[in-house]
Amino acid sequence: MNSTALALFGAALAVCGGTAAQATNFDFSIVYWEGTDSPPSDPAATQTAHFIIDDTTVSTTSDAARFFDVSGQFFGFNGNAIVDLYPDWAFGGLTIIPTPDTGPDYSHMSELAGDAVFSGDVSAPHILTGIYDMTDYEHVLPGTWRVTITEASPAPEPASWAMMVGGFGLVGGALRGRTKATVRFV
Image 1: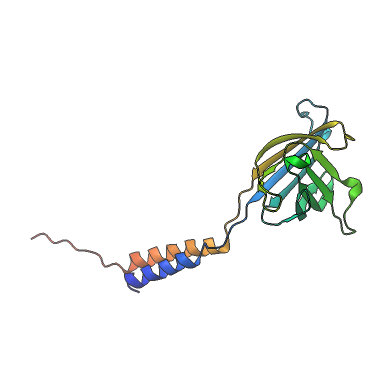
Image 2 (image 1 turned 135 degrees about the vertical axis):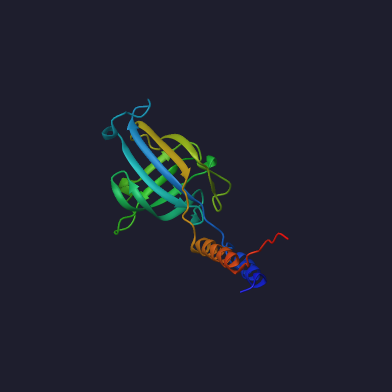
C-alpha cells in the first residue's frame, strides 16, 4: 500500500468514527445520618445509596426531570428505582422510588428537599456536580442527607477503540513501507 492510499484510508476512518453524541454519566452517592453535625466516623451509623444516571435518558413530569430504571443500591435495596430531580421552583432536591419486580414501592420512597441538582429545563436538565446537604421533605427522618454528584468516567466506545487500532495500523504500515535512505560520502 502506498502512502497516499494510507492517508486516504486514515482520513475516511477519522470521518466515519467519532460522530455519535456521547452521554454523560453522573455518579450519585448519598449518605444519611441522624443529626446535623458532620457524618459519623462509624459507617454503621449511616445509611447509603449509590447509583449512576445517564443524562440522556430523561423523561419529564410537570415538575421534575424523571429517570426510569436507574440501577444501584438504595438504602439497603439493590435493584432499580425511579429518580426524580426537582428544580428550585419545585423546592429542589430529589426523590428515589424503588421499583422491585412488583412495581414502584412508595413505602420505601426517599424525598429529599434542598438545592436543585441541575440547571436548565426539566426536559433537558444539565446535572450539576457538587456536594449538597438535604433534609427529609416530610421531616420524618430528622437527619442529614449528603448528596455527592460527580461525573463518572465513561468507557471508550467501540468506534474510539477501532480508530485507535486503525491509527496504529496505519502508522505501522507507513513505517514498514518506507525505504531506508542511504548516505554515501564521496
